[in-house]
Amino acid sequence: MKLFVGNLPFKITEGELQDLFSEHGEVSDVFIPLDRSTNRPRGFAFVTIDDNTAAQAAIEALNGTEVGGRNINVNEARPREDRGGGGGGYRG
Image 1 (tube, rainbow, N blue to C red):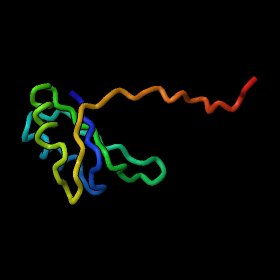
Image 2: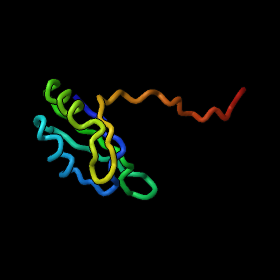
Image 3: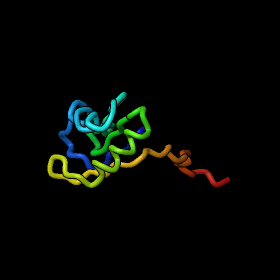
């Protein structure tokens, strides 16, 4: 299960997230997206735990807990919705 982790401190590392979540199950992937213009973390991450029971336990244990002075949000990641693209400039 892929988890969305929001409201993260900007200085958190993938290793720190790996350690935090591995207390609840085996972490197979950690991804911290970077802002394209500043190349800095955007304040959220995705953590993948293959065992759904362990992933659910991580959500229940970590959602709302304090990490680096911020209360993090942890839930199941949802697929990105189509944003439409195109910009809508031409109205024929």
